[in-house]
Image (cartoon, rainbow, N blue to C red):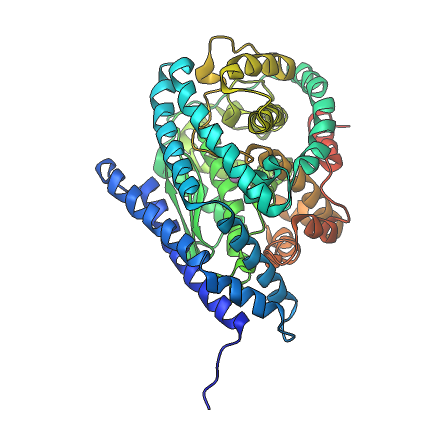
Length: 504
Ligand code: CO
């Protein structure tokens, strides 16, 4: 007699194929950002688009709906299988919700707008850029509406849900309303406090091979497994690839080693999450990272909570001095522990989000969230962007951006490339990071002392058990409740900032 596969097993087999196509796509996209000669761009873009199209085709096949329905009737599925079925259905419903013609029109508008952005941003020319962004927003509203109809949620929430399943404006507001209240006066107090501290910027050059060697050393200390991942260089740092083959990148500034190094540690934090996902669920929907909030929480826990702490810098400072021995000998003050700490905790309002410190970063995010939410619900139009941006920057950070759209509302690639609902998750990730690190230390009080020795094992053991190994088997909120005793809340983040910057 021939054994036959159950509906669940056929569904799982189908998702394995989809996952393996996605694996190739991820590695090829890494190649595009790291190795590919510029002239290969158009052909590569077409090939990658075709791979994405094939994955979409496989996902929306009618037999997927049949397998899902039949698998639901199976009585032999365990907790993880049931969670996998639920995730498979979520992906299927989302993929099927948007008509193919709309998917394509939206993708073309995004691509065209991104190209226009590259041209007009350089010229600080918002007027000629605006029509392209208007097109993107109009189509994004249609996409959001189609998703909202299927998922039974608000259109903006349907966009957020793509990056962070289950999150909504209510989730975001529960964090942003208290932060908007707390941060502006807190930032002023910190800046006032730091005014007296003299900071010496170490002067380069710091050779790229020296920086890379140090980055590899610290990333290995943090527990990133280089047998299942690698470090390279790209224009914008990212963490790509797949769990068994994680590709992280950074960029080096020969005059300033501090930022490239934190870039490595940030991306390694993302990479450790991927590497810690359960291998037996590889390529299955339930085996994937839960969403952007937990992903960013893992990079920020490592970068902000751990690697900017006095414990970590005590471990790292001698390694910095050894790596850049010639510079360190000629300017010992710049390489002192106190100076390195001050450098890594300097708070300074800036126009550019990606250069922002931990205290002022949320202001950049809150502004973008309020704007994109209003763009999607139609209460704001694209032509009003520069004005609204300037007013927001004045009220949140006291900075003037009038006439400087290049460093104002045109600075990020997100909106021109069609990513709406993404920005708020950076700050939700920072908040989750503070919450998780606080619980990790409560559960394993030896963590800070171990970090001082360069030993990440106690921290990684807690993260593996409470975050990484759970993959997408539960929601983000449930995972946080299980790991920290509460849903996402800004309390720990605010406490962390007060402790670190005001010592109270
Ligand atoms: Co990140």
